[in-house]
Length: 284
Image (cartoon, rainbow, N blue to C red; front, side, top):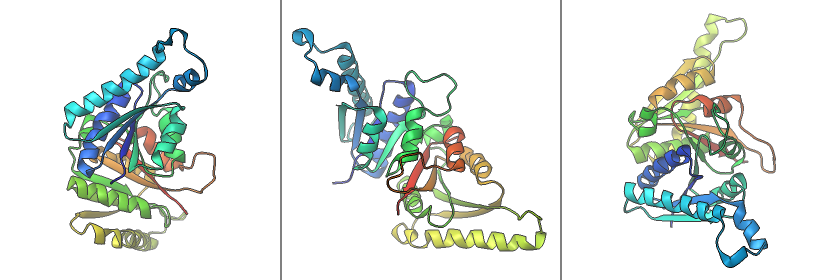
């Protein structure tokens, strides 16, 4: 049985947006959808006897959140297999654990109670920086969220960072029957010597070809656009995200590292991209 796509919900508009996107994604991939909500009250109530045996208000709220999300998915995708649960854990720990047995974890860009004006909430940032599997942060404009561009954008990083991301991006493009736009940037040296330009471009193009060579054998029908551009990767990918339905970024991740492992480019795009962002870790 395929691993489920997991989506975290907290009742906010951002999480409902993530639920809608995740339902469509699960249908595309042909996998079950698992809806989860973290509630520490479940843990507290397990240790302390409740007065009168009646469920507490937080318990009722948690059950309402997951039930409403499940009903929302049923209306959107009646044939999709859906599982919903309230988990006695904090949101980050819960979703990190769920991600160990999932196709990917989907989360909204912000949650309930977070400061107005935040571009990315603490849960989304922590998941993207620590998860051992793919994390998809749902953000962007209506066109990107609606999947109207028929384009998956892959940011091709340095060798050893994007192999898993390339396979993920090709699978997404195949499921969507759309173009994969594989982009690698290059920069001039400090002296800006023009004769060196072709070398940089050729090296970038070769890197794309080598990265996609093996994964393309699994998805030979995917149309691939190989793009080499001069400029800062964050700026280039941010601009191209306006014409994409999903931006896929690979990150190198060391096991046992307690802090966030993202890099400046990924961090910037998680905050500013015009479409959902998938962060796919490359494990040693």
